[in-house]
Image 1 (cartoon, rainbow, N blue to C red):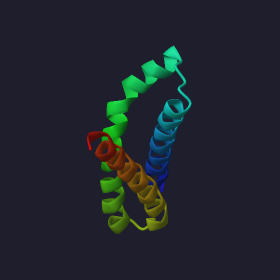
Image 2 (cartoon, helix red, strand yellow):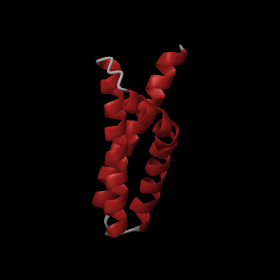
Image 3 (cartoon, helix red, strand yellow):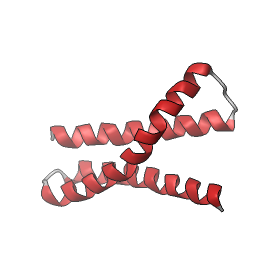
Image 4 (cartoon, one colour):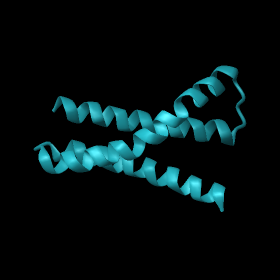
Length: 92
């Protein structure tokens, strides 16, 4: 149960990070500290989204608390799909 909650918190924080990035780009917020945090965390958070999705998929079938893992997998899946969609739009 502890692992499920930790992974759920990691998935939620990852999704909130990308929502924060999206909001700063929409409203053109140019805080110095926001830019520094954005640049420091961008690559680890980009890599974390698909890793959390895969871990949730594996643990959902291994463990008994599949509801927690399913919620976390949906959140991580939405983050992963939105990242892929943004990359696709920026390169085409």
